[in-house]
Each structure stands twice: as structure tokens, then as C-alpha cells.
Length: 264
Image 1 (cartoon, rainbow, N blue to C red):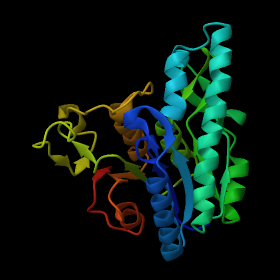
Image 2: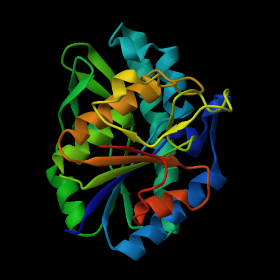
Image 3: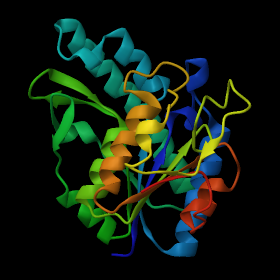
Image 4: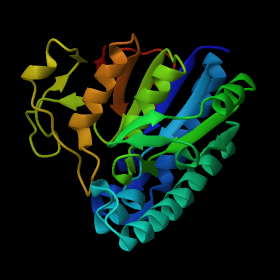
């Protein structure tokens, strides 16, 4: 198998998350999928895609307080509604990738993944490994999983991405989000916010990391960074770039290391 790169498409760029609308941003999704297809053709790398939930997951997760675990019958209803909603979003992403020439196939994390106290502790990998060997691009997403301690809980795409990267020995992670990387302030509110080019264990403690816009029950940007630092401890470099700037995702995938924020 060639170099494995895991691409995370933020829910903020493929949906109308900032507006809290249950709606796909078709223009952004189509363009990003074409960039992924072009990059795969140029580099011949193996790819796996994980996408965020946006309002398709966060709306129902907040409504039914799924991040608090099993609270009764309403939690079961919420789990079913959240999964159904996420399957719709996943189908749209897979369809868009296939239209862009990527042989994409869906995989459902909740079909086999197990969490314990909100942390992923078990995940079947054999099928994913074989898909990658055959040149397929598996497409996973944030989901609601069984949790050995809390009954059920939310698996965010930000948690799934570094977990899979570590378990499958990916070479790197590239994340497309609604900002051009990590800033020392909220760039959407502060014009003087400066891009942080590199984050390591040594400097992360001195940083103020902004959260996500729109409803987000999975921890936002701060948790994303800490999860990626865990992957960096195992030698997996991550790059956070803008998914709103045309061409930036493709450039990052094809080797431009100067874009966005690098976590190593």
C-alpha cells in the first residue's frame, strides 16, 4: 500500500454549521471532493476520509444530551435520529467523492466501534485495511457509539481521525476547516489574530485556542489540537488548512507544507 493520508473534512465547511441549518454546502463539498480526487491522481497515495457532523449530528446530540451518555428512553430516540441524520450526510459525501473520480465507500463507525468513558477503545480494522489495499477510499464520520461506562456516547470525527491514523500507521493527517489554521485569537472576530504556524507539546501550553462556531458538543478546536498532539507523539504530522480557500486542500495533500498550521 502506498503512503496513507487521512483527510478530515470539517463539518463547518461541508454544511451550513455556522448558521445551524440542517443543510449541506454543496458548492464547498463538491469543490473539496474534486481537490481530493485531483490530489490522489497526482500523488497516487492511499486515502481515507473522515468528515465532521456539522448540524447533522450536533443538533440532535445537543437536543438529546447524548454527550452525557444514556439518560433513558429519550437517549435511544436521540441516538437513532442522530445516526439516521449522519447517514444522510455521509451518503452525500460519498456520492460527491465518487463523482470526483474517487472510489469512495462508506463505513459506519457505530457498526463495530466501542467507547469507554467517551474514549474509543475498540475498533475493527481488518475490513478497512483490505479496502485500502484494494485502492478504495473509506469514508467515515462522527457517530453515536456504545459506551461501556456511559451506555452510549458521541464519537467525534476529531477523535476518530487520529485514532485511525495511529492504528493504520498513516503518514500524515490533513484537516480542512473554516479557518486557515490555528490562530492566537478568533480570526472571525479579531482582525489582528495571528496564524500559529507550528504547534508542539512545548508551545501549546502558552496558547489560547478558540472554539468552534455554531453548535458543537464535542469540544471544538481545543480538543482537536490535543487529539492531534497525541498522534504527533507517535510520529504522525497533521496540517490544518482552510477548506474555504479554493485549491488549499489540494496543495496541502500534494506536499505544500507551508500552508496553515502544522502540528508535530
